[in-house]
Image (tube, rainbow, N blue to C red; front, side):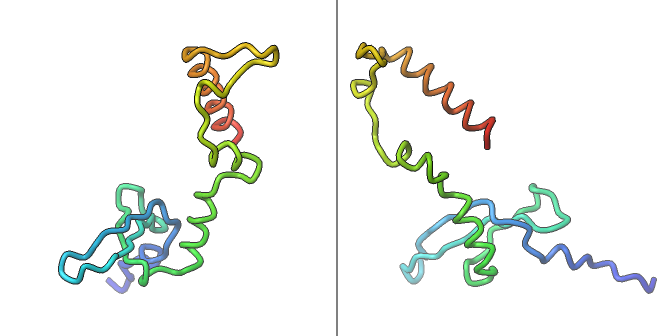
Amino acid sequence: PDEDLFNPDYVEVDRVLEVAVTTDTETGEEVTHYLVKWCSLSYEEATWELQEDLDPEKIREFEEIQKPPADLRHMVSRNISIDDVSTQSGAKLGPLWMGLSLWCLIGLFLLLF
């Protein structure tokens, strides 16, 4: 009976998972919400919270995670068409080989990070 039933971890932000920017229907202003995973709670219990209610440091951590690593930024920022890709011998890759190559790169990236 004297035990405190409320766990303070439940109101401590573990990490920010996602961001959503919407327009308030009444004021027409943009509103930013972040999906928050709380300490000691499961991912299913994550909630959307207003930007101004969160620690700016947690938002900064989320934004840093969203940036691709420096050595991969050149690949992400450039649109590459199939016509731009060729082998070392100069032969052009067809759509099937381009797709397979892309899947291999994605798989390698996921394994490394």
